[in-house]
Image (cartoon, rainbow, N blue to C red; front, side):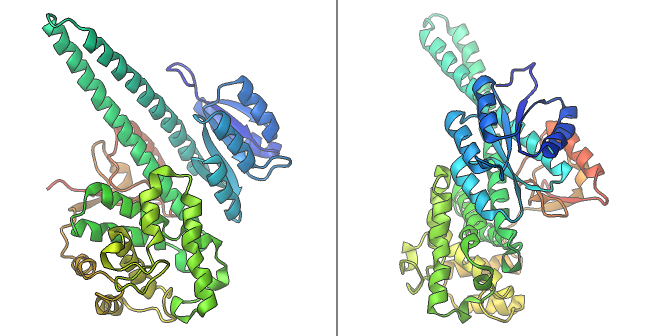
Length: 432
């Protein structure tokens, strides 16, 4: 593990010497301690002898591929963060690595140097946050024990210890909040795997997730539930990775019975992919019911009205609204106004009337949204709150919506902004 005075130790595993050389050239100037291995077996031998903070492994290696190697790392050294190097075409390999090795992130080859530096930096920070969390929890436990042992006559000392405990508790809450932000960022990156297929899926996850979140806010749902609905909408199409390109090109209304049956399997596939992620099981329930109808004529279980989770009712409408405009439901791409009319026509049939009413308010621009302000990416300051995802022009997620900008990343954001050919615009919440 990293001490306060020790550089992060990174193990790079690849059977291609030129890849290892490139990683060494890229990462060494940042002060990391680098160890290179040319196979999964050699990497495991290194881990047996040396404490490693971060493992970067290639997918395609002889004898033991990256998914198998990272699975061993997860089982034997679960606290070591795991990254996967893979090609754009290795979708099944990415899924295997997520299921078996529970990787933190994946990096496509050939990589963008700014992207890999950002991902490695985030991974190391995540490790530090985990250690801070453990340290703070241990400190809290120790202070609680000391508090119990204090004599009732030492009132002043009790007050001092209580103050220290409150301060530690606040630090622990801050560390947990950072972990939540990192988790959401990972989910958004995971969802972007779907968009690698292109076609109707390109950009769909973020559009549907954003609309679902806005409808949920209009319905004044609990903040935690709104977050779960947003995550479920991001991952709603993850099972479609298992479908053929030919099937994905067919609008749903033109599918025959056999094609509809094959299409419906994407729900079960999504459950299978997300099963290892315990924190996502509420989202999985919403994903499972995204094709149910309010009138009970949907699939797979023909649930009716309130039997369908509210998140699924929202995602169903948001997904169909997007599909009507992008050819996923019928052959013709509908204009926005016509798509809105179709949704309203199906209130009480396909969709929950209350959800339709909230959708109408949101889509009309009359919803009580946050007041936002657009600023130059390089002008972000500590304390600002992002109103929407901060992404590069290539679609790379940098920071998620609702993220509170911290002092320690302001300079890195400024440097990254200067490296871009033209200014990037961030949208932040404006103080009322």
